Image 1 (tube, rainbow, N blue to C red):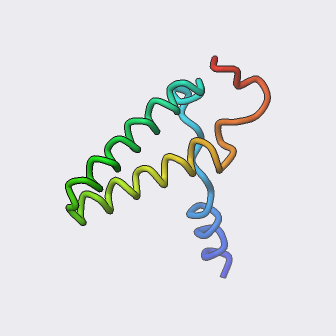
Image 2 (image 1 turned 120 degrees about the horizontal axis):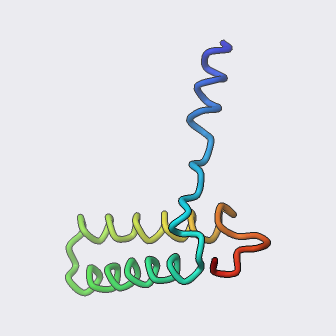
Image 3 (image 1 turned 135 degrees about the vertical axis):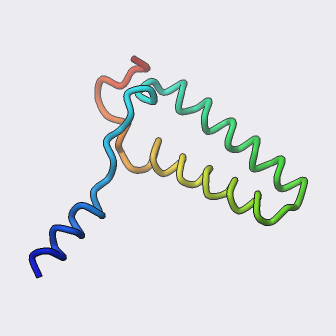
Length: 78
């Protein structure tokens, strides 16, 4: 039982934020690129690539802005 609790703790922990994405403008540029890709795939109507674009955009939005990994005091774009 203890093994499964440790495994769950490891599996459920969020990864540490990468220092490259600490500045807000870099996160915004990545999200703009993902949204542009998503718009392109919506026009092309290819379901596989559309699903990948939706997944990348959703994960980026979650990790960069909603999870709280990169926000907080002292962010300031540095």
